[in-house]
Image 1 (cartoon, rainbow, N blue to C red):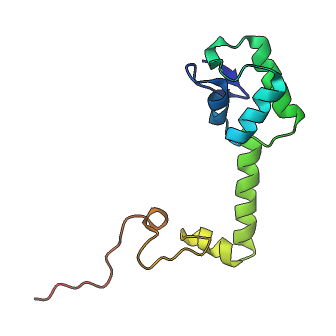
Image 2 (image 1 turned 90 degrees about the vertical axis):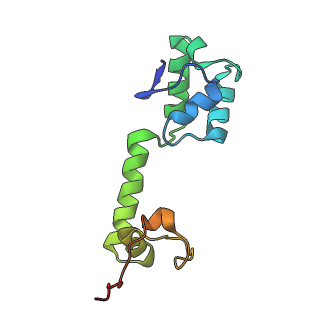
Length: 124
């Protein structure tokens, strides 16, 4: 299994799709990296030599893409900042509710979690 920037990328996938296993690299950015490196996009990840893997890693660092640990740190720090200044988005993040204006009365189960029954008292 090839290793790029501390992440194991899958052997049997084409290099464009294998690069997406790195946090912060999506399809468009992966295609851009492969095109810039001059590697055939149809090649599989296990077919790449060590030199080609180093070339891809160099391109990622050269273009200064925020990936893996740096990006995760950046995202968490921005969420903590929103929560610290008590803005609307920060409060929604803190409560685990949808942040971008979605309705919550009948939807938002993914964000809110399992339904919690409230106020039902059994009569004797």
